[in-house]
Image (cartoon, rainbow, N blue to C red; front, side, top):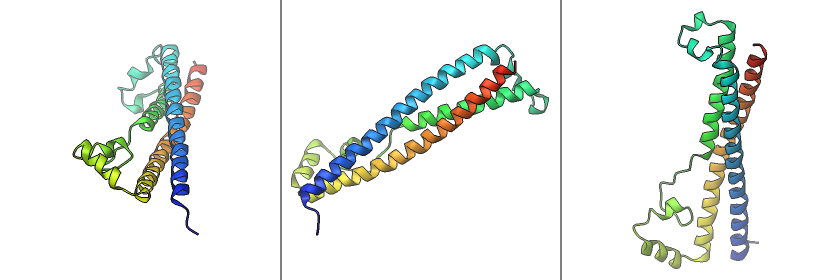
Length: 170
């Protein structure tokens, strides 16, 4: 038995809302992580890295680095990678084709009349399909965001632990 047009529309809207919530959660987590990384990086810099001039010593050949300089390097690099991954979470997605749901797809129509005519002339199945296609696109964006978020969390945890070890060793 086929689903009714009403149940397809209701399903697509619920899934769309569900995926949007997950995307919003990823963005919030990335923002929190980036703020925490910024604060901890500034603290680490002020407490240890600046005082011991570890960052300036990186301009020398790595063969000349002392243990503290190497430890500082392995403390900072994961924090930088984590911050970059957190930023990657919130980078907006791009759409290259006209679409009926996503704003960047809508703006690809020649004008507002063309968009309005397209929507008005479409039957319920076409509109539901457009919504479901947007759901699919959102899930791909969601997957990208959570992959970057996972990298940001693990790199941040590694960097924080390494920074703590560096600061405690001083």
